[in-house]
Amino acid sequence: MKLLSMILAGTMLAAGAAAQTPVDMPDGIARYDWVRPQADFIRREAMIPMRDGVKLFTVIVMKKGTTRGPMLLTRTPYDAAKATSRNRSQSITEILPISDTEYVNDGYIRVYQDVRGIHASEGDYVMTKPLRGPINPTATDHSTDAYDTIDWLVKNVPESNGRVGITGSSYPGFTSLMALVDPHPALKAAVPQSPMVDGWIGDDWFHNGAWRQSNFDYTAGQTAKKGGGPVPYGTDDDYDAYLDAGSAGDFARAYGMDAFPFARKLMEHPAYDQFWQEQAVDKQLAKRPLSVPTMLVVGQWDQEDSYGAPAVYSALEGKDTANDKLFLVIGPWRHSGVNYNGTSLGALPFGGDTALEFRKTVMKPFLDQHLKDDAPKAATPPVLTYATGTNTWERAASWPGGTPKPIYLQAGGKLSFDKPATAGRDTYVSDPAKPVPFVPRPVHLRDRDVWGPWLVSDQRFVSGRPDVIQYTTAPLDKAVHIAGAPQVDLFAATSGSDSDWVVKLIDVYPAEGSANPKLAGFQLPIGIEIYRGRYVHGRSTPAALKPGRLENYKFGLPNVNHVFLPGHRIMVQVQSTLFPLYDRNPQTFVPNIFNAKAGDYKAATQTIEHSPGKASAVWLPVVD
Image (cartoon, rainbow, N blue to C red; front, side, top):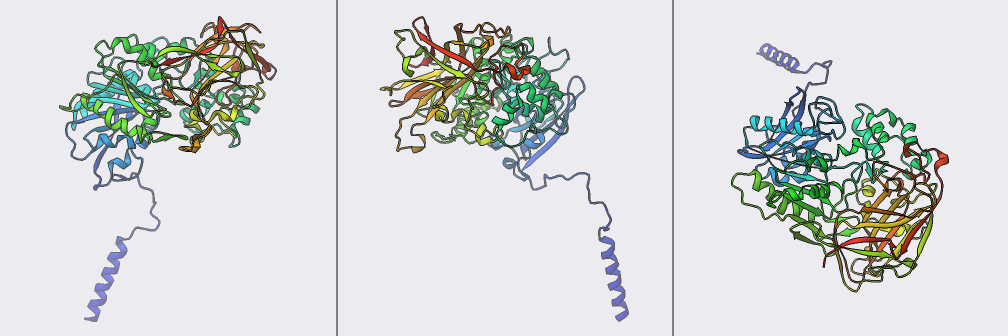
């Protein structure tokens, strides 16, 4: 008996030893499926073939048990795999962006795709690849890729009802617009948010010809296959980093940015030439009928793409003769803020979560109407804007909602709706060696808490500078409501041969405000924009300014819906630098400012005219 026990024990020990993993076995495994059987969703990955044979990586996510689900597509350069694995969770609302919650909980199939040539997709990546044509000789573009993707989806996702919507913000807003060019019949609705539309006039790369220097970071991060990321100039004050480098071109060359094809393209096309004109999406869409219901969305304080959505709306408005396909939404948000918490922006509070409210009560019913089976018609207004100041949503039949009315710069730093009665002018010295910062120093462009809300930064930090001139009304005795894009009408001269002009429209809060002490005396920007003077006689034909000659600079501020309340004052600030966000104008004309030399940067005396017949003003779209 004792012998039998010993035999059995030895057998069990041997069996246990055989079941153990060898100590020297390699520990790597080929693949781990992090979506476990208990997950409440299905997540599929596919390589969808395009017409030229290139395959694009696509992730399809839906709740288990989904049938006849509408598909909502986003085409992105920001990593489809990452977008569909926000958290490593077994809950669908945890793995997807928070803005997808209402959709997937209501039977939508969410689709994310890497655009051509980036992350897991095949092909070559071309930044905001233009439509086929003069500057894109290939057979494909974002329009054809969207078409081919949608065609595959409706044929290969059996849980769908065959209807597709497209949405996304920023670059994905751009790809949403591109899908509207020769759209697939199954594309039934589009919601482009903060779309990149015209990279020279007012989106991303330039604003009215002035270069946005932080885009070197974006270029390095997006287009380097290895070693990409922020430009390696350190973490000290960005103001010093850019100033010490010299011109924007010197900065680029110092850190190897001239090795990036896209950076070279930007620096080789500083004027509004064919390169930019052919890429302007509003101009391309204006050539075509609008066949897909489209809701354009933008934030009033969008620090990256404030221009695009209203520009597309303006280009397409006349094509929607039945007033049933084109819609515009302007909310109180930063760039892409519609997809996050919209309770506040910087120090500015709103009436609840405005972004969530919009997504649930406006955007989703709009998409439901066009994508779901038997969904009711949504009560979508042609124009929906949020009136900051009174914190109320307003519906309208068209945009802009106000009538242009000039508010004039006056002697003694005054601002008035009355024309100036006598001749007058003000001067200040703009020194490119001491540019005006766009936010308080130290400047950290990469800090989201700085960059996201910078357009609502309290402007008192520059009020005492001698190179910032300001004009202010008396306290208002009644509200002034504006709805549209204020227009700058500036008569100005420089002692140099080139100059930038920065104009800010500001709501000055009462000095005392016990109801909200953080806003007491606050100088809230309603719109800020820059204009490069060399383009005053033509965007594509830069020319030297004649020293001392008065020129009339006309340009738009961002579209807004705002109410200046009684007791508040309206202010206009004028300056000539906004650094380091925008590169410095040397104030000496050179053919290409990217190649300006140290000796080209010279101080200049700037003159603002406010005289009868040459009365500088900002034309406000006033709602009567």
